[in-house]
Length: 314
Image (cartoon, one colour):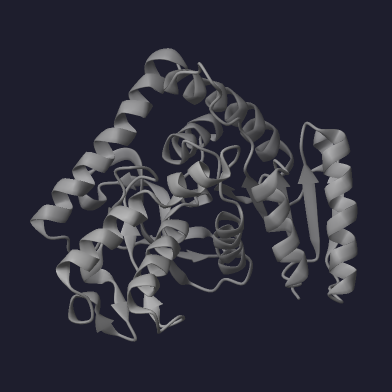
């Protein structure tokens, strides 16, 4: 185990499951938890510490009540934010979570100036944009988690169709984390074989649609809540890649600076993750149809960003 410290702000289902995953796998020396609900953060720290002991892990899990206790982290993960409530417009949700993100990020960078920051809060791409603007950080230091999750969902739906080859499926999704995400069947494989060679076109189209609605399907089934095991595990992969300088290539939300023809907008694209966060942005050769879909996805994020610029950052 390396002598690294991970901080998690927002200890709801995703944040607590992430802490449990990292502690169980003995991936860092300390995990600091922070949440406005002091009783919850203390309870989660105690519960996860006990689970770590059961796993014979050396990771220490600590609840932080004061801002200055949450310090010196190598990676900070932000899951803080509210879910959309009845009668709340999309703009209301966006602006409320932008306010929360700004407050959280300013405190985080004050006491954790060297940390790589992973944003999990929704609406994901807009929250990464908000965090970058509030922190005035270079893009490599603030990254959004979504693409790994969306790709994992696509892999699941491929497995459903095939009925075999779990663990040999490599699915690829890019674009914004929402209805306009862009699953990429031609960059997806089963044991190295292109998806088009193992499945019919109708099956592939069905997988694409199910992937786009993967999160909504779980929300509908739960009625009150959303997915957390898959988002938390996906985030843990990003944390590990950074802590261990793995140079892993994952789809993550990052600010584009000319890649794919776009500037100053956040979207999910393949990146190389290492100790410095995003160490490389990888440009795939998209076909015309995928370029059009990616453009629509960018436009959806830009709509949110324009709202932020007109109503929040002014």
